[in-house]
Length: 250
Image (cartoon, rainbow, N blue to C red; front, side, top):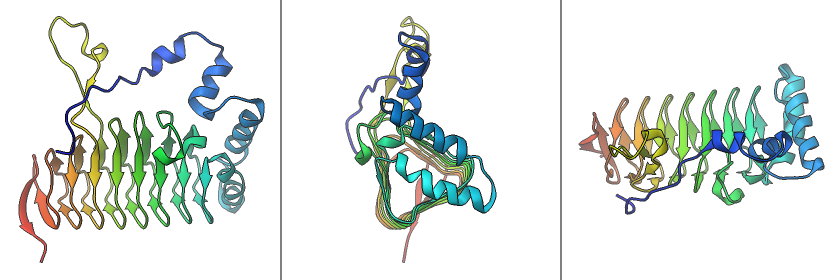
């Protein structure tokens, strides 16, 4: 495992949304990511005029308007229709990144654009969710992330360069504390075994679950449907629930 267990704070979205402050302040905190009328208007203009528009016009509008919302924007970014972006000022998308239709990018738990990074020439396929609840999410260059994946960063997620992730995979998260007599489990807080770290040139099959605290070494292959609860050696081939080594690449 990569780190010692930790006790990250629970992401108490409902408490924050129902607490003090105006509705506008809450909206800017959770969606825009910064105060100020100018930031709010730029965000609203891009989301209203660009995000839902179909066809070539929508594609052109998104290329023109969405990069300006980002903390750091590379050249040649491509955005599909109906993308959700929360706190984009804390995101960094490098050159020629492509985000497909229906994806959700949420950097509300990131401290800066260095904590939400998508590397150059990486493709994020349709309906995938990338969320930084806490710490960081860093995806390397030349990666292919399949449709309907979920990256949920609590203790941090790092994905190396040239990685292939098939559809419907899950990365990260933590687990609720379950002590009897300590109140409802949903209120007890979280436990985490540490960040998820995936090396370079890794192939992860469809429907894989990679849990917190796991390191997957360079060149490894994870078979479809596996649940990865422990570290995977470089160039190893693993499969099963929980995942076990079945071979080495040759």
